[in-house]
Image (cartoon, rainbow over all chains, first blue to last red; front, side, top):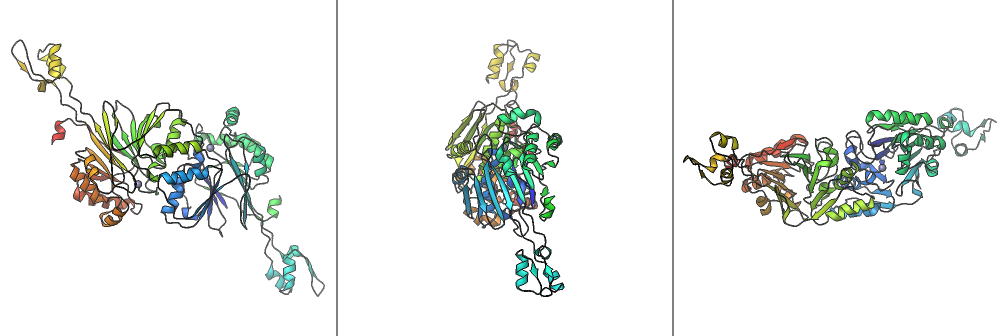
Length: 314
Length: 314
Ligand SMILES: [Zn+2]
Ligand SMILES: [Zn+2]
């Protein structure tokens, strides 16, 4: 899986950075992508990536501030104009339905695909056989959610070639080994399930938070996450301003990552006051509290590999 | 004055072209600009021009289709985030207020400047001592206006240096000459007002039409205009499709310009089916009916000089 940032600026677009939207590229067998937030110009940014709106499966909104939703009516309309008929789902705080439906009503827009809108609260927002998405409330000026995306672990494949080679007959013994049981062969040899089954695949955890001050739910959502996306609107010297506006500083983002035991941190949602060359300072401040931090750059992939379980026990 | 196109594509953005918005740069003494329509990404495009939102004085909306209005909430909000306190005015069809106010209510946006919203009908939309803006209904799928911007003519300046040089005393005679009267000097010479006053300045007429099929009001709004901006969504071979969707072909746009006696035509609002290299064909088709046509290019100035009255009598 990969994360791609369509925008990394807070509040409004500037020449160098757009407002918030984050692509989560889903595993290859799924072939789709999800979006987190949809600031104005998200569809324009997507035109500069490999992502086609026909493959947009779900869109999760953290909160209703304009820099996170004003791109929604246009993106949803364009997906229809392109002739896409595949259903898509939109999740967000109460009010998201009114926003989209009013924009469509006034502009006489009609979608050629089913759009399911879910106004969510805390708890499980979505679940299928591969992923669970949970939401929890953060601490911003308006209702704002963070999302924790949990991929289910996958048990390893049975090493059938090896079993046949050493003389284990195909049949019920394979099932026992696969299910975790050790088996005794007729010749007295013991085959241990552990040897017979490949490494199980770790289920990745990706946490994408909306705008927030430091809070307990931010830490809970990011617990042991492989990747945490956290806003860092300001440098540490503006902690007071950050608190006043319901935002975090670079160091506060890093402390949340550290407390949560996250593996990596991507900071984003930078105040317009910071030029591109200032982002290194936001990054290095954050690294002082959480070394594995990067300041997100737009329109490039951040890969989140699926290691096996042992790799992740380090 | 100048026109700049922030977008020239119909319906949705594509990699090479954005959706509709047109800057009218006002005369230098005014120092402001007006906008016609505000598709998504208009504020992003403005970042690539010399135009600052602080100088945005008025915004005229032709109709409520998404590709003409979805950039409004973001642009209006950013103007406030930038700290602009100067009032601005928004004109458009009924529904424009609901669209903007609902987006602001849901996103908890508050403007730091007075925004006056005028839901207009046909007739005079705006007037001041230099400009009159008139609106008339076009023929589209939903209510859609065209705008005619008329600059008032200015009488020429009195050639005072020359008058003093030839011995006309400053004083009441100057007033008479300026007002159009010829005067007799004490030495018997007759000074004709026509000689004493410079050329009067022609008031420019600029017509910006919304999406439309050919119709009488399009011609009326463009009557003798110095510049007509007309949509040309399709090449002439798709006239039937154009009619069905309430749009015009290149040749239909040109015929309107010709019937109206307009001086120049800029065509825009090209269907996504046309690549950049196809625009020359739209242009040459239009030129077959109205030679002084250009296919609008984004982010460059189209100058509309203020000639004197004689220049424009050719
Ligand atoms: Zn924000
Ligand atoms: Zn249009």
